[in-house]
Amino acid sequence: MIAGLWNRLTLHQDRSAPFRLTRTEVSVTREGLAAIALIRRQKLDGFIEGLFGKDEIVDLPERAHSGLERLAQMRALFAAVAEFTADESKPGSIKDMEITLRHMREMTKNAEHEMQSF
Image (cartoon, rainbow, N blue to C red; front, side, top):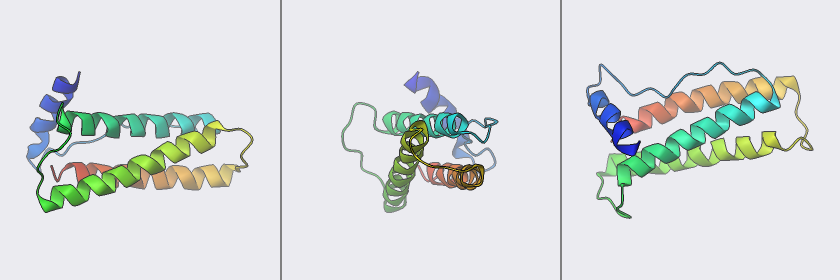
């Protein structure tokens, strides 16, 4: 699975064919937000696992190192959204969910941009 992901990623080294995270239609509900946040977190986990493989340390250029830090921050935000929205005791209006979904779409674009630095 990871080798397949890595092979697909190498196809996107050309800037004219950038890597894109899977687009999914999401309903503006707790369940929809939780699902897409979990998917995004898992995709970032898979990207990092594919990048590092069995190594714990990889020598990266400064730009890639900075990108890795930003991806880690985005991964943490996706994880927090998944956890928060899965907890029905937490308050959240439809407007809050729409805003969160809009931010998650923007983070998705940012994550794709950072993934191009590798």
